[in-house]
Image (cartoon, rainbow over the protein chains, first blue to last red):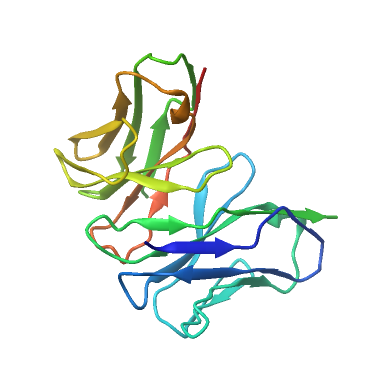
Length: 115
Length: 113
């Protein structure tokens, strides 16, 4: 079946430092799945951060970027300068289609940003 | 704007007791609906999906059932809770195409004792 592996947390970064959360995927039923990053801020629900549906393309939102790399089957999340408000749990996910449109998630990476 | 509401926010239940969790989506007609579950320390996994009223498909067997009595309502239930049912339950909706992103509700935290 499909699987997603991402950086194990927790990850602690100082404010204004750069961030990368690694994500690699394996999709067994489709060559090019849709890829997503979701985020859960403290006390809030799961929100879509960004998505990319075309291999080779980059998605961006709120200063975060992720590039769909089909050669390395990766979708790493990056930010040049984090803020304390970025503290949250980040989930990488893929959707490989089918009638159930199942999202396959990674385990999540808890990010803490120190001021 | 679309809103998704889940109830209750949290539940503490005894093993063997019944359970009913609910989800309502407003502002979107005929969405696809999904139930996901995350055990403590585990990974979010899809339990059920529904593409139309009255039709629900099971993805994972966890001794749970789901129903869609109305276009905007999705119910998760069981007659007898197990300890293993503890976790975080999320309802989600999407447009009727698998390529579209899914939008999640705030979730229900279930503790089975």
